[in-house]
Amino acid sequence: MKNEPLEADILLVDDEEQFVSTLSARLQLRGLKVEAAGNGMDAMRLVGKKVFDAIVLDLIMPGIDGIETLRRMKAFDPGLQIIMLTGRGTVTAGVEAMKAGALDFLIKPLDLNTLLAKIGTAKSNRMLLI
Image (cartoon, rainbow, N blue to C red; front, side, top):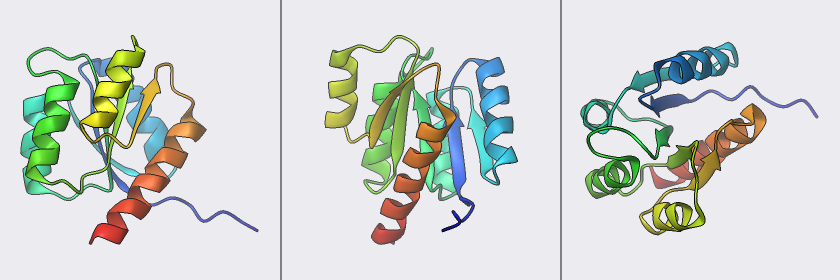
């Protein structure tokens, strides 16, 4: 059975420009549409303007951090499918993110296939909520 290519609109939120650039390119090569934000406030503005199938959100950012951004996004739209990322993950942070409504919590460096699978789950969940 041949896998259908994943088509999804993704918002990637991370303050590390090189990471965003590299991951965006890798996701776009696989047919995903990617928009990026370098901080939580810019991400909130984008979420207010467009519907995303999945949001990939960094935990540690300047200004409002990933957990606070997650909380604000879920308050704006409880159906948002948010995958948290961190380079410095702790069990406590992962539990906090999941309690705040994250779909999942992934550690950098990312396994791209794992991320794609999570994005596929997020898109399926989002479609069920529409």
